[in-house]
Image 1: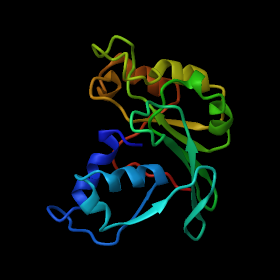
Image 2 (image 1 turned 180 degrees about the horizontal axis):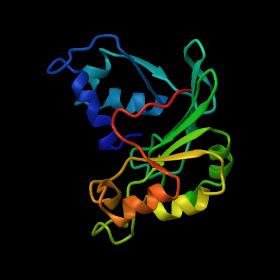
Image 3 (image 1 turned 90 degrees about the horizontal axis):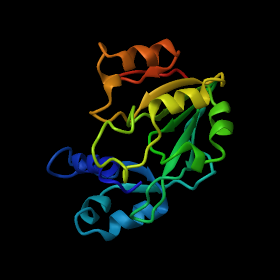
Length: 194
């Protein structure tokens, strides 16, 4: 989606950094169009191969590897929507869902999570009082997410963790509670075999 934290990394592909030409980039058509229309991003976007992801339609990335965009409710200031991604490998399925406003706003949540083997889900905040002024930055809280999906056979892994979230501290009670629940805290370099 169009939030800065999810698009700023594109700058690393520009001539000032990697100087990439023709790299295939996958995004919703509306997001591609927004980036092409913005003077800051347009020169870079024209150097890339923009491939639209159509919600609900599987896209073959390689033999035995597909990705399907799944719309989810999240703040949409730019009018381009937000998607989670179901990645289908030869043997397993993974859901990558780093941003959602509220599980109650997405009636399909439990069904989608139950349909995958692994789900990396939004864990921005652990508690409502973790960050002053957080109200406009809607995200489900970690304990609520764990409680809501504990009954599913899906392996949960928490991602998109805000720097204020105590689960980043391995000495915290919150970190211990998450791991005791059987949920993983995703980390850099972690791999999931699909």
